[in-house]
Amino acid sequence: MQGVGDRVEDRTSPRDDSRGRVASVTGIIALGTFALLWCVMWVPSALLGSGWLILYPLFLAAWIPIGLLALVSLVFAVMSLARREGRRRRAITMLVVDAVFLVVSPSVLWLGAFPLLALVTPAPA
Image (cartoon, rainbow, N blue to C red; front, top):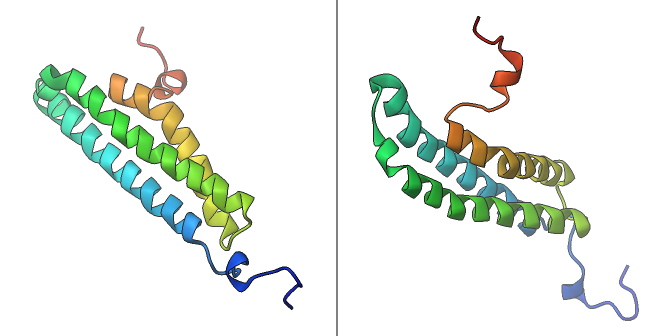
């Protein structure tokens, strides 16, 4: 039922989840691009013992747009939740994934391996 001051274009339909879709797409692109960057940087080094590590500063600089893309995804997920748009589970999932990605990805790129792996593996004798 339409209120007295409501205009049709002011109300969003329950299925209008454009911000949630933007959050999902940008988050998936950021994660995929980071995975590609990590593979290009660390797989040759692990397999051959040498590789692209001479370009290390460029790889670290290449993380900046990926991090910004993940930040955009995080902001759109928050906006989707704040406006209570359609798919709440997807927005919460992207919010958590992007937040963890933004915190963990610089150290993963820096160290080459998952940094928390050192906490669960025994130290060499």
